[in-house]
Length: 113
Length: 113
Image (cartoon, rainbow over all chains, first blue to last red; front, top):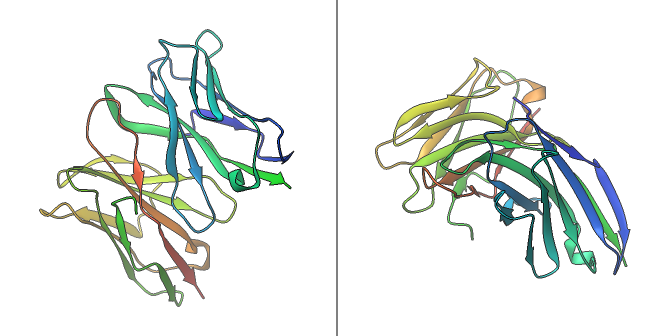
């Protein structure tokens, strides 16, 4: 069932630093790649998503980089803040059929003040 | 508030018992997904319903079952509970079809003692 590999499992970054989380997928039919952010005791929430027609998408301090040939995508959090401390999940699915979305195992990010 | 409502928020029960978790999807969403998240684990897909019909099955135990009712709310039934079933159970909903992420509820924390 797991077709999306996510790393690292955990990440500690100093305030103001850059957090980078990487994901790799196997199924070349996937063409929709969302990232979810989950705070303790809460459900995951959609953070940002990308499609393969662009190599990068930026929303505020959050950027997705996408490498179609390598079947990899990554989340960059610029100027990381303690409030960004959460678990981040990458996911992948088909854009025209989101019924089979596969999630990565998650990365627990801790941003130290 | 994500628009996906899960009840109860917390549930403590004994081994061997049966419980029912309830999920009301976001207005307009026809698909409901159930996920299990054990301590420090990723999201394990259990089952998906679309407009009342089972659409996909993941790693769901035979002791677990689900259904989606005509008003689109869904219930996940867990029976013969074991200590290892203790986990967070999330429901997510989505608009079926193109390019939509999932909207997650806040989850039900199940503790089996």
